[in-house]
Length: 483
Image: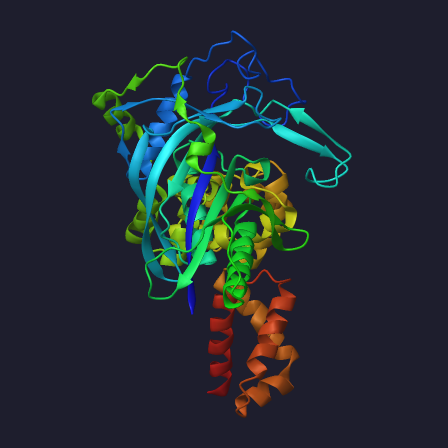
């Protein structure tokens, strides 16, 4: 039996308006090579200057993951030659990173574990090669270089090899993404490359401590691909070991078309990159008081938010974790409570019908016209008995796309639950008078007839009768007939 040993290197683009060492924009989706400058293009004589916000966001990430923040830190040059790196080196951090020795708590299959962090360091992103006729260089007709991404600020978060299964790795990446989004350090848009990771994986016999030969899987940009890539790689390495084949230390890519990893190149070592301190950038001394000011400004983290939801609102662990782990949902939930919504009902709607609508329409809440105030109003109408749950759900589509509030929309559609006992009694009397055979069958001991009679009541009221009250009055009136 073998076990996997997995560590992740997560690259998170920081939410700055400009690049790490120059004033060029750092926005996604612009026309190729329109967000560049002499610094990001590596032109002779252009000198880098650190964006102060990058340092602050990196410290925030370190504090949120319980890292030790460096008293002093510096930048280094990492040399490699590739068309997307115009200078011929990347500015990164080597031996004096901004943060070290942190941890992230994850919950997987009901088990809580601590994943240790080795380090967090700042660096610049590389440009992007656009391959004509193929998704990657192999098979392409030609390739073009887009340097918009060159110089975009990154933090790289390096875990210790504490993960043991592909599922744990996915939960770790999801948890880390939630933390970074909650503190506003990264927008977490994996489809845009804002968050991506490299996975280091080896296998070893269960019960041994010696690490096997490590393979790195590069540039994974989705949770699903991470899990699938690791599952494939574990199987590939196990088959190789069982067949007495040698595992080669190398870098591989995940190919989603064939659902397998492909060899890319032999794995480089640190000395291959010829690291040395960047002579154009100064050391940075971090004032402890400044670091504490950043700590005080940190917003509520997902783990604290989840605990609050369970403690203060009696949400289930699963529901609280789901809400707290989604920054948009949790903000919407908290705002709806401030608008007067009941916590249990708001949670039920957000994770139920509202989530189903968003999934069906491939939208987020911010892309709709639904608001926390609308949700609170809708729940208030249900609580007062003005609307049934079914009626309220029928309004959801219009509330998502229109400006009307729930009460005005319900009135416009003629929806109002009949909750007046006198009005219901009159309708029930008509139903009982019109169905004497069924009434007799019920009195003879056939309880299924109650459902038929209730259906007739709902039909007469066009579904607007309060189901609970109507059922109660129907039973009482049938009992009176039996006396």
